[in-house]
Every structure is written in C-alpha cells, then in structure tokens.
Image 1 (cartoon, one colour):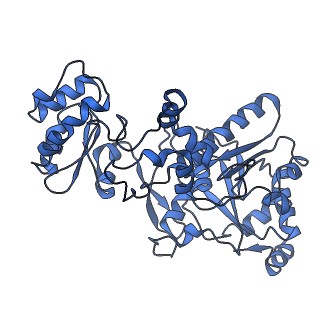
Image 2 (cartoon, one colour):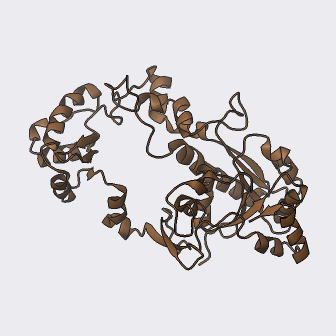
Image 3 (cartoon, helix red, strand yellow):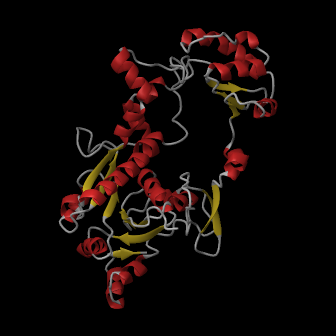
Length: 400
C-alpha cells in the first residue's frame, strides 16, 4: 500500500520545535523530506538532553525522523543553485521555512523568486506573528504567543494572583497554533493545486493559532463583554471539573461534566448527597462542592482511586507520570511507542504517529541524523560530479 503522502516532496528549512514537528507528521505519512540546515547555525534541539550513545539528541532524533539532512550555507550562490536544482530537477515543490519575514528572499530563495522557476510552488512560512502586522519582525516564543492570545489570563488559580502560574508543560502555541495549522494549510494548498495547478504561499502565525484556540475566552469577551479569570469557567477550575490531590501526594483528574457521569462519580466516592438533578454548570452552583470533594479524594492514595474508577465509566483518570503513560495498556494497545533505527545498528524508542489510516502503517525508516549526513547522496542524485562535490565541501557551501 502506497503511503498517503508519498507524492509530496518537501524542502524543510525550519528549526527547533514547530516546523520540524509539522514536517515529522508529514514524513510519518510518507512525504519525502530533505532537511536543510545552516552549518553555522545548528538547530538548538541538537543540544537538548538526553543524548543517545552516539551523541545524538533524542528529541532531535524524534522530530527529524525519516528526513534526509543537507547542510547548506545559503549565503553562497552555489547553495542557492542547489536549492533551485532540487526544485526544478527533483520536484521538491513544497517549501517549509521558519525564518523571520524577508529572510528567505534576502537569501535568494523567497517565494516570489522560486515561483518563477516553479509556478506550482507551495511555500509555507511559519513565524511567530505572520508575514504582516506591526509584530511581524518581532522575536517570540510559545509563552509570548499564549500571553498575547489572552489564554494565560485565565490560567491558574484564583488565589495565586501574587504568584503567577508556571508555563504550560507543553508548547501549545508552537505545536497547536503552529505545527498543526501548518500541516492543514499545506495540505489545503496541495489539494487546491491538484485541482487548479496553482501554487500558494501559506502564511502561518503561531500567535494567530493561539488566538484561534482561545474560543472560550474570546467568545466570552466578544459576545458576553466579560474577561474570563482563573477558576471562573466550568473548564478552567471553576467547577468540579478539576484535578484533586490524593493522600499520597498524587493527583486524580475528574471530568464528570454530564449529569450521568457526575451522578456516578458522587456514588463512587460515597457522596450521593452532592448530586443535584438538573444542576447547571454555573460556577456559583459548583464551587461549594469542591472543598468536600477534595477532602474525600485526599482520604485515600491514588492506587485506591485508580482501582475504583478503572471499573467505572465516569470520566475519572489518574494523573500519570511519563513512565506510567508509556506503559499504560491503552498506549501499548495503540502501538504508540515504537522502535526507530538510528543508522548505527541500534534503535531508539520514540512516540509513534497518532494518525492511523486503514491499510497503512507508517514506516519509521530512521531517526534524525547528524547535520548534512545525506549531502553527498543528494548532490550525486542532482548530477554533480565527484570533483564538483569535493569543491562544494572545500568552499564551505555544503557541510556535513
């Protein structure tokens, strides 16, 4: 069975998390991807621990699996020529880049320049604030995009105004606002191109994405004229939908929103008196129950509650550590932990693709590799002679 995206050929100029995560998703579905890195500006994820026995960062290896690596000094005209040949002669007609607006154009590989060579080019730009607007040239990171989206204003606890909550444990704006929207935009452009032959520039802003995810906060303001605050909404700690500490310092998540789940939860903890038929989800009607729920949950260790609620279908689950999550039977049954070859006779455990299609199993060919590992192979496929390849390396046009 042919991989779903085997017909896509992508040049990936992105770094760090959001761009590589997006192209990892595409590579897992069969897209052919060449990762192009600047030798003098190595991807900082290469430095992140833990490192495998061969010195490669495990996080970089995950984000860049199934991608060939080409080290190019794009300030050299000969490097720009290599990119052009990859597009024209090898059919790499999709670009993913993560530079600030205008940088690719200054290097000679911008959208307007490359679409002259390939009118059907799809050029995907992923930035913090997009290609337009007063913040388009401004630096930022995940926490900044979340801050400007309004999401962080109602995150945390209402009693901790003097102690702001910590950053979220994963990069919501980077992956949710950036990576996922990039994949959607790229595939939408591919579908349109298949119908019309037209290429496109896809402009994805992580701030835009975070803003779009703030559906509760922005709707409350736009229609209700009010700002949400911490623990003021039924889904941000303002109701019994919350996380509770157990006797042994672990935590239990309670998501029993619907009446049938709420009733089952109350029965399970021996507090049927807390169930009020017809109770709506207004914060004022639920906050008074939380202290009593906390007291009950704190009376027993997590193992007690885990065993009890494992038999019940009421939307209550333990808060697992990463190790526990890896070994959870649902994780194992869904084959979400896989072995990926590292290219040195070893393999590395990684998280699998969450996208499952009938009659297709993702092929995890190899994990992320050292910078420029496939340079000679790619140049040979482009028709460069041995002496020409040697000269490109000697002139620091190509590295690896």
